[in-house]
Amino acid sequence: MRSVGLRARVTTGFAVGALLLSAVMASVSYQLVSTSLIDEREKNAIRAAYVNAAVVSAGLAGGQRAGVESLWSLDTGSEREVLLRNDGAWFGRAADEGLTAAIPQKLQLRVEQGRPAVQRIRTDGVPAVVVAVPLSTSAAFYEIDSLRELDDNLRLLALVLTAVAIMTAVAGAALGWYAGRYVLRPLAVVAEAAHDIATGKLNARLDPAAEPDLARLTTSFNHMVDQLSARMQRDRRFAADVSHELRSPLQTLSAAVSVVTRRREHLDERTATALGLIADEITRFQALVHDLLELARSDQPAQRTPVDIADLARLTCRSRNVDDSIVQIEQGTPAMWLVDRRRIEQLLANLLDNAEKYGGGPIALRIGHVSDDSCFLEVDDDGPGVSAEDRDSIFDRFVRGRTANSRGAGDGTGLGLALVAQHAAAHGGHADILDRPGGGARFRAELKGCTP
Image (cartoon, rainbow, N blue to C red; front, side, top):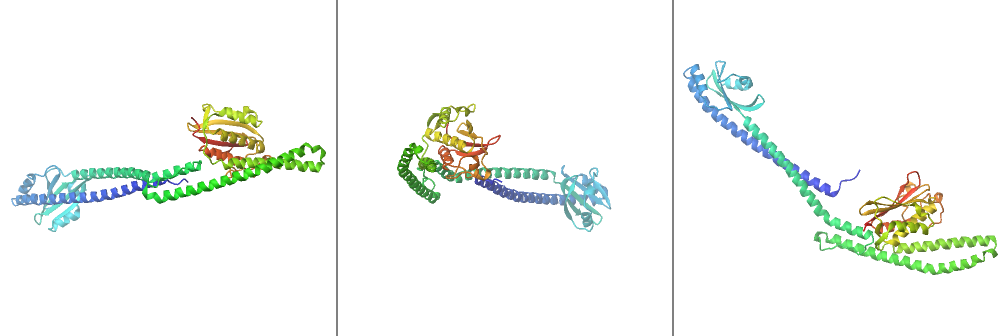
């Protein structure tokens, strides 16, 4: 499973942190505000209930009828209901509608014992507060104060706080994205420099003054590149020197063998066979020296010029005695490519030679494009293909697949496909091996920046 990127983790961390912080703050704010408002509402309800209870109590002094009339005279508004319980009977200003049933029995028992009481209840799903005030041993005053408006306000407050928490989380995610982008920007510069170096631009360096906090990293990176460049220069010089030194004796040997070969009819059979083996090995040795020289300079940047890619492909086929009718051009592929002609010619030649030696011969050379900035070259062969265990190393130097002998001759240098990979990398791309539909192998070289 693919791991989550650093920028995504930073963004998620900021978003989750902002959400948790805002949720905690919203929860605490809601609790404090709701508790404060409800307590204040209860205090107001208690004060009003005692005032109204005093009025009703004064009315009861003139008899039950006067007490009920005083109940009717109270100004309670639409949010409050008042009840009078006298001698076991309930009196109110309107129909009961379940008000008396909503008053808890424990609260009524407490009032009957001569003690005032306050309790929150729900009537018809609406929160309310009941204030009970004993008036005498047989009479008690009840005032039910509806909290509908307060409950609606608290719900609106909860909705607002939730929206604020969500917006805070979104803002935290945006801040995390920006912070991740800002933090990763120096790493992107390092990655770009590393990519340039991998494609042969050994002069790529980082500026230590660009990001003071990463001065040690940039200095170490530049030092590493300097050391790598020096080592590659030494290796390239060594390979070139060795190859040049080998060329002279090889040419002498080749000339000597050529002279002897012209007198082959005067040699006995065993000597003639040995001479043939020597001639073949000298030819192979010369090819190896040539490939080593190419590898020695393959890490140089590509010298791009406009090239008619189809014409170059057909020319390469004819130079390898391959029918150029195998060249296939996908529709919409640009005719002119911006590439290093020498490198691409050798890349195609090596792929054709590889197919000829190990794949029963090339059967298709396909030219196409993946995007406006990416093109590809493919060579199909008719051989047994490449085993899965060989695909990771088939483009390494001096490596030939386990099926090389079954695919064809075993006299290759092991450098042809390594050069293909090097030339593709010099163009910002890569080489790959695929299965050809119907059997065989498909070698693919993808190039970047090849369209003018």
